[in-house]
Amino acid sequence: MLPGEQESGLPGGGTPRALPVPLSGLGVRIMSTVTETLGASEVAAALGLSPWTSPWELWARKTGRLTEPKESEALDAGVRLEPVVIKWAEQYLGPIQRGVEAAIQGTPIVTHPDGLTRDGQPVEAKTSGVVGQIVGHWGEPGSDEIPEYYLVQCLVQLEATKADVCHVPALLGGRGFVMYRVPSNRDVQQAIVERAVNWFEYHVIGDRPPELTTPPPLSVLKKLRREPNKVVPLDLDLVDRWLLAKERAREAQKEADLLQAEVIAALSICPRRWN
Image 1 (tube, rainbow, N blue to C red):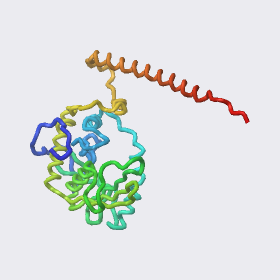
Image 2 (image 1 turned 90 degrees about the horizontal axis):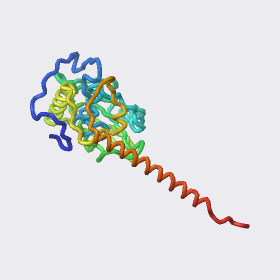
Image 3 (image 1 turned 180 degrees about the vertical axis):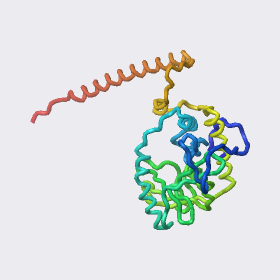
Image 4 (image 1 turned 90 degrees about the vertical axis):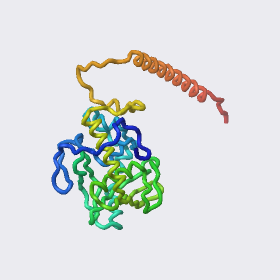
Protein backbone atom coordinates (compact mmCIF):
# COMPACT_ATOMS: atom_id res chain seq x y z
CA MET A 1 0.00 0.00 0.00
CA LEU A 2 1.27 3.47 -0.85
CA PRO A 3 1.98 5.99 1.95
CA GLY A 4 -1.24 7.65 3.11
CA GLU A 5 -3.41 5.40 0.92
CA GLN A 6 -6.82 4.34 2.22
CA GLU A 7 -8.17 0.82 1.94
CA SER A 8 -10.16 0.53 -1.29
CA GLY A 9 -11.53 -2.99 -0.86
CA LEU A 10 -9.43 -4.48 -3.67
CA PRO A 11 -8.12 -8.01 -3.70
CA GLY A 12 -4.38 -7.73 -3.21
CA GLY A 13 -1.57 -8.05 -5.69
CA GLY A 14 -1.68 -8.99 -9.33
CA THR A 15 -0.45 -7.49 -12.57
CA PRO A 16 -2.67 -4.99 -14.39
CA ARG A 17 -4.75 -6.85 -17.00
CA ALA A 18 -4.98 -5.25 -20.43
CA LEU A 19 -8.50 -4.00 -21.12
CA PRO A 20 -10.25 -4.32 -24.49
CA VAL A 21 -10.13 -0.60 -25.28
CA PRO A 22 -9.17 1.13 -28.53
CA LEU A 23 -5.66 2.56 -28.70
CA SER A 24 -4.17 4.62 -31.48
CA GLY A 25 -1.15 6.73 -32.27
CA LEU A 26 1.65 7.34 -29.81
CA GLY A 27 -0.20 6.57 -26.61
CA VAL A 28 -3.22 8.65 -27.55
CA ARG A 29 -6.59 7.04 -27.12
CA ILE A 30 -10.01 8.12 -28.36
CA MET A 31 -12.78 7.13 -25.95
CA SER A 32 -16.55 7.58 -26.18
CA THR A 33 -17.19 8.70 -22.60
CA VAL A 34 -15.16 9.68 -19.55
CA THR A 35 -16.69 6.77 -17.62
CA GLU A 36 -14.49 4.40 -19.66
CA THR A 37 -11.26 6.10 -18.62
CA LEU A 38 -9.39 7.10 -15.50
CA GLY A 39 -7.60 10.45 -15.44
CA ALA A 40 -4.40 11.25 -13.59
CA SER A 41 -6.19 13.29 -10.91
CA GLU A 42 -8.81 10.54 -10.58
CA VAL A 43 -6.09 8.02 -9.77
CA ALA A 44 -5.40 9.93 -6.54
CA ALA A 45 -9.11 9.75 -5.71
CA ALA A 46 -9.21 6.01 -6.45
CA LEU A 47 -6.33 5.51 -4.00
CA GLY A 48 -8.14 7.49 -1.31
CA LEU A 49 -5.70 10.42 -1.42
CA SER A 50 -7.94 13.20 -2.75
CA PRO A 51 -9.28 15.69 -0.20
CA TRP A 52 -12.17 16.50 -2.56
CA THR A 53 -13.33 13.18 -4.04
CA SER A 54 -13.66 9.90 -2.16
CA PRO A 55 -13.25 6.49 -3.85
CA TRP A 56 -16.99 5.93 -3.41
CA GLU A 57 -17.86 9.25 -5.08
CA LEU A 58 -15.49 8.48 -7.97
CA TRP A 59 -17.08 5.02 -8.39
CA ALA A 60 -20.58 6.58 -8.41
CA ARG A 61 -19.55 9.02 -11.14
CA LYS A 62 -17.79 6.40 -13.24
CA THR A 63 -20.81 4.09 -13.13
CA GLY A 64 -23.22 6.88 -14.05
CA ARG A 65 -24.93 7.03 -10.67
CA LEU A 66 -23.77 10.56 -9.85
CA THR A 67 -24.08 13.72 -11.88
CA GLU A 68 -21.05 15.94 -12.34
CA PRO A 69 -20.60 18.43 -9.48
CA LYS A 70 -20.69 22.17 -9.88
CA GLU A 71 -17.29 23.79 -9.74
CA SER A 72 -16.34 25.28 -6.40
CA GLU A 73 -15.11 28.86 -6.16
CA ALA A 74 -11.54 27.65 -5.59
CA LEU A 75 -11.71 25.25 -8.56
CA ASP A 76 -13.16 27.96 -10.78
CA ALA A 77 -10.33 30.30 -9.77
CA GLY A 78 -7.79 27.60 -10.59
CA VAL A 79 -9.25 27.08 -14.07
CA ARG A 80 -9.29 30.80 -14.79
CA LEU A 81 -5.73 31.33 -13.53
CA GLU A 82 -4.21 28.29 -15.23
CA PRO A 83 -3.24 30.23 -18.41
CA VAL A 84 -1.58 32.88 -16.21
CA VAL A 85 0.48 30.25 -14.37
CA ILE A 86 1.44 28.56 -17.65
CA LYS A 87 2.50 31.91 -19.11
CA TRP A 88 4.73 32.52 -16.09
CA ALA A 89 6.23 29.01 -16.42
CA GLU A 90 7.13 29.62 -20.07
CA GLN A 91 9.67 32.21 -18.94
CA TYR A 92 11.72 29.33 -17.49
CA LEU A 93 10.62 26.28 -19.49
CA GLY A 94 10.19 27.77 -22.96
CA PRO A 95 7.07 27.25 -25.11
CA ILE A 96 4.48 24.92 -23.55
CA GLN A 97 2.10 22.99 -25.80
CA ARG A 98 -1.48 22.93 -24.52
CA GLY A 99 -4.37 20.55 -25.16
CA VAL A 100 -2.38 17.31 -25.09
CA GLU A 101 -3.45 13.79 -24.15
CA ALA A 102 -1.41 10.69 -23.31
CA ALA A 103 -2.57 7.21 -22.39
CA ILE A 104 -0.88 4.37 -20.56
CA GLN A 105 -1.37 1.61 -23.09
CA GLY A 106 -3.19 -1.52 -21.99
CA THR A 107 -4.91 0.36 -19.14
CA PRO A 108 -7.95 2.67 -18.84
CA ILE A 109 -5.68 5.54 -17.74
CA VAL A 110 -5.76 8.57 -20.03
CA THR A 111 -3.95 11.70 -18.87
CA HIS A 112 -4.38 15.32 -19.86
CA PRO A 113 -1.41 17.33 -18.59
CA ASP A 114 -1.85 21.08 -18.62
CA GLY A 115 0.95 21.17 -21.15
CA LEU A 116 4.14 19.65 -22.51
CA THR A 117 7.52 21.34 -22.86
CA ARG A 118 9.36 21.28 -26.16
CA ASP A 119 11.19 18.11 -25.08
CA GLY A 120 8.01 16.34 -23.94
CA GLN A 121 8.06 16.98 -20.19
CA PRO A 122 4.59 17.32 -18.63
CA VAL A 123 3.57 20.55 -16.90
CA GLU A 124 0.90 20.69 -14.19
CA ALA A 125 -0.15 24.24 -13.25
CA LYS A 126 -1.61 24.57 -9.75
CA THR A 127 -3.12 27.26 -7.53
CA SER A 128 -3.78 27.17 -3.80
CA GLY A 129 -4.74 29.79 -1.28
CA VAL A 130 -5.98 32.19 -3.97
CA VAL A 131 -9.50 31.61 -2.64
CA GLY A 132 -9.47 30.56 1.00
CA GLN A 133 -6.54 28.92 2.77
CA ILE A 134 -3.65 27.02 1.18
CA VAL A 135 -4.49 23.31 1.02
CA GLY A 136 -1.75 20.76 1.64
CA HIS A 137 1.99 21.07 2.18
CA TRP A 138 4.01 23.10 -0.32
CA GLY A 139 7.74 22.97 0.36
CA GLU A 140 10.82 24.69 -0.97
CA PRO A 141 10.95 25.90 -4.60
CA GLY A 142 12.59 23.41 -6.94
CA SER A 143 11.70 20.44 -4.72
CA ASP A 144 9.00 17.78 -5.17
CA GLU A 145 7.40 18.76 -1.85
CA ILE A 146 3.84 19.17 -3.08
CA PRO A 147 0.60 17.68 -1.70
CA GLU A 148 0.57 13.90 -2.17
CA TYR A 149 -2.55 13.89 -4.35
CA TYR A 150 -0.76 16.20 -6.81
CA LEU A 151 2.39 14.10 -6.49
CA VAL A 152 0.45 11.00 -7.56
CA GLN A 153 -1.05 12.95 -10.46
CA CYS A 154 2.42 13.98 -11.64
CA LEU A 155 3.81 10.44 -11.38
CA VAL A 156 0.94 9.12 -13.47
CA GLN A 157 1.63 11.85 -16.05
CA LEU A 158 5.28 10.77 -16.10
CA GLU A 159 4.34 7.13 -16.65
CA ALA A 160 2.09 8.11 -19.55
CA THR A 161 4.56 10.45 -21.24
CA LYS A 162 7.73 8.45 -20.39
CA ALA A 163 9.38 11.75 -19.40
CA ASP A 164 12.05 12.27 -16.74
CA VAL A 165 10.50 15.17 -14.84
CA CYS A 166 7.12 16.82 -14.34
CA HIS A 167 7.18 20.59 -13.82
CA VAL A 168 4.66 22.04 -11.36
CA PRO A 169 4.39 25.84 -11.56
CA ALA A 170 2.14 27.04 -8.75
CA LEU A 171 0.51 30.28 -7.67
CA LEU A 172 0.26 30.15 -3.87
CA GLY A 173 -1.49 32.59 -1.57
CA GLY A 174 1.05 34.68 0.32
CA ARG A 175 3.98 33.27 -1.69
CA GLY A 176 3.28 34.14 -5.31
CA PHE A 177 4.64 32.04 -8.18
CA VAL A 178 6.73 29.00 -7.23
CA MET A 179 8.17 26.24 -9.43
CA TYR A 180 8.36 22.60 -8.28
CA ARG A 181 9.90 19.57 -10.03
CA VAL A 182 8.77 15.95 -9.64
CA PRO A 183 11.38 13.47 -10.95
CA SER A 184 10.37 10.17 -12.49
CA ASN A 185 10.36 7.08 -10.28
CA ARG A 186 9.38 4.09 -12.43
CA ASP A 187 8.92 1.64 -9.54
CA VAL A 188 6.52 3.95 -7.71
CA GLN A 189 4.77 4.92 -10.94
CA GLN A 190 4.13 1.30 -11.90
CA ALA A 191 2.90 0.49 -8.38
CA ILE A 192 0.42 3.39 -8.59
CA VAL A 193 -0.78 2.30 -12.04
CA GLU A 194 -1.23 -1.30 -10.87
CA ARG A 195 -3.35 -0.24 -7.90
CA ALA A 196 -5.41 2.15 -10.03
CA VAL A 197 -6.10 -0.43 -12.74
CA ASN A 198 -7.07 -3.05 -10.15
CA TRP A 199 -9.40 -0.51 -8.52
CA PHE A 200 -10.99 0.35 -11.86
CA GLU A 201 -11.52 -3.27 -12.85
CA TYR A 202 -12.83 -4.37 -9.47
CA HIS A 203 -15.11 -1.44 -8.71
CA VAL A 204 -16.07 0.20 -12.01
CA ILE A 205 -16.06 -2.71 -14.46
CA GLY A 206 -17.18 -5.12 -11.73
CA ASP A 207 -19.74 -2.56 -10.48
CA ARG A 208 -18.80 -3.07 -6.85
CA PRO A 209 -19.02 0.05 -4.65
CA PRO A 210 -15.97 0.78 -2.48
CA GLU A 211 -16.52 0.34 1.23
CA LEU A 212 -17.84 3.44 2.97
CA THR A 213 -16.12 4.40 6.19
CA THR A 214 -18.42 7.42 6.57
CA PRO A 215 -21.55 8.39 4.61
CA PRO A 216 -20.92 10.68 1.61
CA PRO A 217 -21.71 14.38 2.17
CA LEU A 218 -25.37 15.27 1.69
CA SER A 219 -24.36 17.58 -1.17
CA VAL A 220 -23.01 14.50 -3.00
CA LEU A 221 -25.99 12.27 -2.21
CA LYS A 222 -28.40 14.86 -3.61
CA LYS A 223 -26.69 14.47 -7.01
CA LEU A 224 -27.30 10.71 -7.16
CA ARG A 225 -29.42 9.59 -10.09
CA ARG A 226 -32.60 7.86 -8.88
CA GLU A 227 -33.86 4.79 -10.72
CA PRO A 228 -37.64 5.14 -11.26
CA ASN A 229 -39.90 2.47 -9.73
CA LYS A 230 -36.97 0.79 -7.96
CA VAL A 231 -37.76 -0.60 -4.49
CA VAL A 232 -34.97 -1.26 -2.00
CA PRO A 233 -35.12 -2.63 1.57
CA LEU A 234 -34.65 0.09 4.19
CA ASP A 235 -33.79 -0.20 7.86
CA LEU A 236 -36.80 1.28 9.70
CA ASP A 237 -34.68 1.97 12.78
CA LEU A 238 -32.43 4.14 10.61
CA VAL A 239 -35.48 6.05 9.34
CA ASP A 240 -36.80 6.52 12.90
CA ARG A 241 -33.44 7.92 14.08
CA TRP A 242 -33.33 10.27 11.08
CA LEU A 243 -36.85 11.60 11.81
CA LEU A 244 -36.02 12.01 15.51
CA ALA A 245 -32.84 13.93 14.65
CA LYS A 246 -34.82 16.19 12.30
CA GLU A 247 -37.36 16.90 15.05
CA ARG A 248 -34.60 17.72 17.55
CA ALA A 249 -32.99 20.06 15.03
CA ARG A 250 -36.34 21.77 14.45
CA GLU A 251 -36.89 22.29 18.18
CA ALA A 252 -33.33 23.55 18.62
CA GLN A 253 -33.84 26.07 15.82
CA LYS A 254 -37.07 27.30 17.42
CA GLU A 255 -35.27 27.81 20.74
CA ALA A 256 -32.40 29.61 19.00
CA ASP A 257 -34.82 31.95 17.20
CA LEU A 258 -36.62 32.71 20.48
CA LEU A 259 -33.39 33.47 22.34
CA GLN A 260 -32.19 35.66 19.47
CA ALA A 261 -35.43 37.65 19.67
CA GLU A 262 -34.99 38.11 23.42
CA VAL A 263 -31.41 39.31 22.95
CA ILE A 264 -32.45 41.84 20.32
CA ALA A 265 -35.31 43.03 22.52
CA ALA A 266 -32.96 43.44 25.49
CA LEU A 267 -30.51 45.45 23.40
CA SER A 268 -33.27 47.75 22.20
CA ILE A 269 -34.42 48.60 25.74
CA CYS A 270 -31.90 51.03 27.09
CA PRO A 271 -32.19 54.30 29.05
CA ARG A 272 -32.85 57.34 26.90
CA ARG A 273 -30.23 60.03 26.99
CA TRP A 274 -31.44 63.58 27.64
CA ASN A 275 -29.37 66.45 26.40
